[in-house]
Image 1 (cartoon, chains in turn red, brown):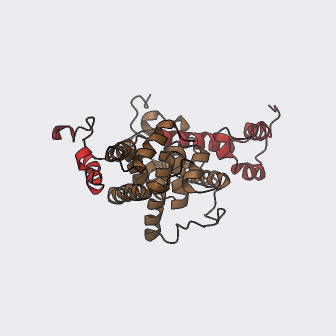
Image 2: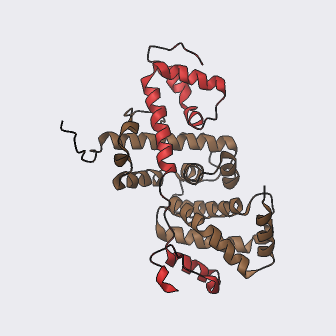
Length: 100
Length: 203
């Protein structure tokens, strides 16, 4: 990894690296480009913040709770598909547990 | 690649086995509903997409070839159903053959508030969650579908490309634009939203 850093704000570089930051967050870049971006970030506070907040944004969405399918929706789906006789409410769904 | 249990289930579905149909619905309907809800942004449309997806899957199960897994195949049907419906609502926004590099506004970051350092309770509270959901809802549908599959549902880049019938580079490019737009929006929100009351801030 390169140890030299740019001590000035270089918006040309920021612009150039912007399109790669998403791949950078996924760890999907070549070692070479990775090192280049990291060297740039050493001297560029803005790009550091963009990478941090981009990564955090992805993480927050990955952790967002999955909305549950309401039992009534599931029941109607089984009906539309003519599978009523196979329908069982989800025992973990508090609203549906009384129907059996 | 298709697992043996997938192949077995597909064969039973193709033979018209009702119990297999029920098993298939039971295993996948939750995922399809979640995808539909995130794509459509409301429950009524999500339910329509859910029903359309399974109706159309059962109708075309004979054409299922074991080149992809059943779930990828079903996701593809669901994404198409959702995009088709969205096209009716946002005809300008949703076009299958839209050039990938369409200029959809300046992606240059403007907001440099580092919200990473905010306490988790601020990042995770209900209002913040609601803002996150709105932000996804307001992405153009072509970016939204990629972002949902890749970052919310956790599919790989290849799986996402496969599901949406896009090239890997188109997926990466759309994902990049979606993520930057969401980052900008969340940064804006957290920079200006008064934080939850912190006990002990006064000292």
